[in-house]
Length: 303
Ligand code: RUB
Image (cartoon, rainbow, N blue to C red; front, side, top):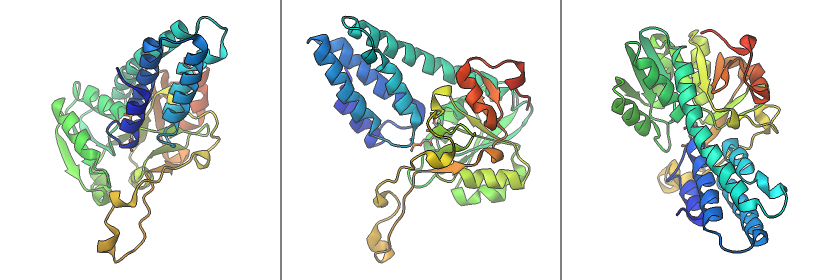
């Protein structure tokens, strides 16, 4: 059984990380709380409310976490006497749909990488790994993976892609612009997407996007619809998490210099060619459309 406290600590310490995984971890904890609860419905409601607040506070930028927890605890607003089964059903529904969404995104996104070539990715995103690995089943594709300072999530990406037999070249973040002339596509994930199509993802993503634009390389974002932040009109409305400076460097070796360690940054929508969601591939400015249900033909895009 996954306790709420354990799940919150896993997310805070980044033992569990990545926007999709933290959302599922939080929802699993809410599920287990409801499943093991033996008190009254009223007591369960109070505990779920407290747990939701604790879980959402663990990482402030990924709206996936807030959206998932809100969905899982939506039955709190319902009628008396049905809370436990309703929460169990909501949590199980979310867990199943979020896993299926990654698979759907992988299959849809792979269609964009429609020939042999090189694809660059930054950080570690299950959606991006899925897209690249799926495309590799069809074409002679190689991946260029950035290290992703300071937490080096690129090591995970390189390993996961190798496990799926994708040839990988691993580079330091500063080499992105140098290799970009040899890149055919960029695919990254997202922690939040604002309604205007601005994308919030691992710090450095916006620099990758600028480099891609400079070299005429299509820049794709692979993100489930629950990463769209209905409350964020633009990327500036999303709070950027700052983490412990010691993740970057020991202040003593810097002669006491102050370290600034923002974890995410905002890539403006106009730098994004398309957003790959489980409900279709959309231009960034139309990302709000996918929240209203499956897109029609017009919302689907070609590479
Ligand atoms: C992870 C990160 C990922 C997104 C999307 O940052 O920025 O690109 O979360 O990942 P951190 P996914 O390591 O700080 O959590 O596609 O797996 O949801």
